[in-house]
Image 1 (cartoon, rainbow, N blue to C red):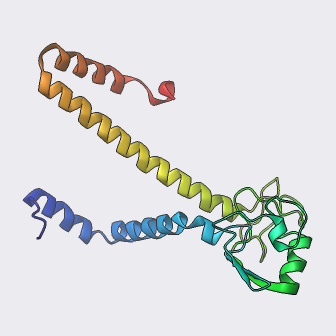
Image 2: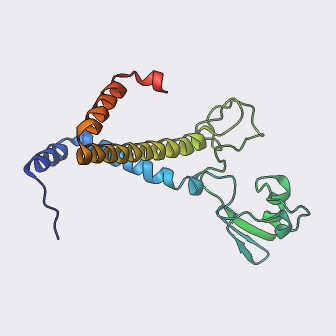
Image 3: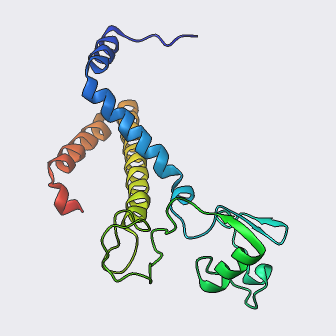
Length: 191
């Protein structure tokens, strides 16, 4: 079953295909968006996979207590801390994400702010947090918020238009006046 496009849509699609920069921008946006969807697998302060004394753990997906690794506390461990690093090196191994920091973890080993290095690819901010990890998580949040807001406003507009079209009369007139007043307000006043 093929999708049948109107002549107007075919012309618009042909114009988009002819625009090389537009296609490149779409590919770049989709690559960044897909990358940001898997932010926990790219930038995280917990290992993706951990083998300790013959047992397998997935710390990126589940919180394990420190007691599972020979500790005394029933709280999630600091996997980059000295205690866990020594335990993992002695009795197992860990597969880490490319960036060993999440958006909130702090690099205490370097002064803040720090310039780019092999450990912090874009450096750290004034509180010692990894800038690249914060960019990845922030981009995901921004894109998902924008898509959600677009979907919600489209659904709200469709519902309002359907109600106005179905009932007509004074509901239609009142709805149109309200939309005109709303669109005439400056956005900064609404925020």
